Every structure is written in structure tokens, then in C-alpha cells.
Image 1 (cartoon, rainbow, N blue to C red):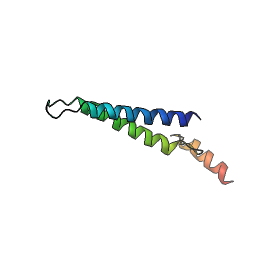
Image 2: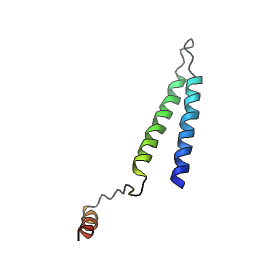
Image 3: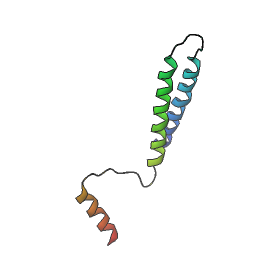
Image 4: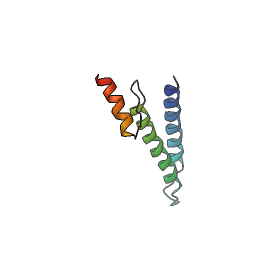
Length: 78
């Protein structure tokens, strides 16, 4: 349930910040403030895609120790 809420909050932030980025763009002024908002939206979008890719029933587990990984895979194989 918390993953669903986190995904909705992230999508809401992406949508809200996209509106702010479009609203801050003014072609006549030469301001680049909108680039800061677009950068934030892009980072949130990548975080959302990464979160969706690795939050499911077989969640991603980072274990850099090769011995631990070998013990886990040998226990499953037997």
C-alpha cells in the first residue's frame, strides 16, 4: 500500500512541477529559471521509473558480498 501512495505522490509532484515549469517560461525575457524546474521534473520522472521497475513482489536487493550471494543461490538450487 505504501508503494501505491508513494507513486501517486511522485506523479502528483511531477504534474504540479511541470505546470510550474511551463508557467515560468517567457520567451521575451530570456530567463532560464524554467530550466531548473524542468531539471527537477526530469529527476523525479527517472526516480518514478526506477521505483516502478524495482518495487514488486521480487524487489531488488543489493548485496555486494559474493559469499552471501553464493549461499543464497545455492540454497535455492538444492
